[in-house]
Length: 373
Ligand code: AMP
Image (tube, protein in one colour):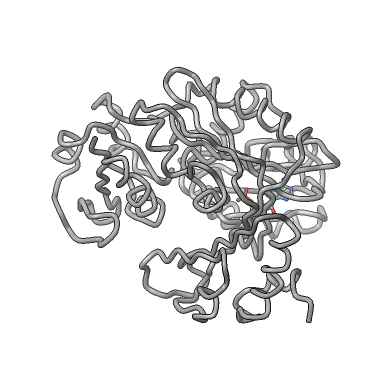
């Protein structure tokens, strides 16, 4: 089968690698250039979205910030999964919050701001401290403000007002959640309504960007997350891999955000799960049976940010795998990731301690938690 992916980044690349053994052939639509490219080489292999859609059996997406006209053309083809509505939910925090309420899953209290009067109502209704997020376009902590003290409201309002000059934009004010940790659940749902979720993953962020993801073994929390995942996926009539990010507050889960696609916090599944998230996404959208999401060995994923080389010694470490994305180096850019696996948890900790000593301390600050030096 032929699958066209909207977006030509690392997620399309890893779908291509995972699809090849199943004879699933992936082409990518580079939304910025409007070109059809090979997801591994970025070679230009065609023009025209309509042509590419006509040649594909299935259309899917690797990100949610896609222009409306592109979404409409894909939706009208009848081949688009998880479909326009799911992508719009992932790309607009207002729609996302409304969906979470409809699915009756817990999330942080919020108030939508379009005007200064709304901002004052938000301060009254949501309370301080609060987190303010642009409804459109923000990710990895970008397009966000924190308000702790009423005296700072005027200052923040000036910045938000500039954003709101775009009539499509809004700000979603959210109650600040004093979470213990951030976790996410990645799972797949197929057209028959079958759901398969991976183990809940604990995520560590540095400056708002994911740096480490590790599956955790907590059956109570896993059950709660699975129930919330199923409610959300059913409400969306979702087909494909979906990721839900949660705040864990004393064993209670609150949804932070949804990603209607394969997700960075699911990259560990390439070495740690029976079937990786990329293959399961393709299986779901191509109408194939879902693969087992069972953890086969404890694995930690380490993001490589802004670096395009790593010490060769990494490859000598048993269970250590490097996944480069073939991108030009830029400060802070996601360039690749490392998956490190072991037979059991204590051995994984031992390997992470070895890695912490091999990796550059400035480039991998989150690894210092494992260092035994
Ligand atoms: P987001 O882009 O919504 O995932 O936010 C980026 C990061 O900001 C999250 O990973 C959290 O660490 C933090 N954050 C977002 N929303 C809240 C909130 N309501 N309360 C506390 N921290 C938050």
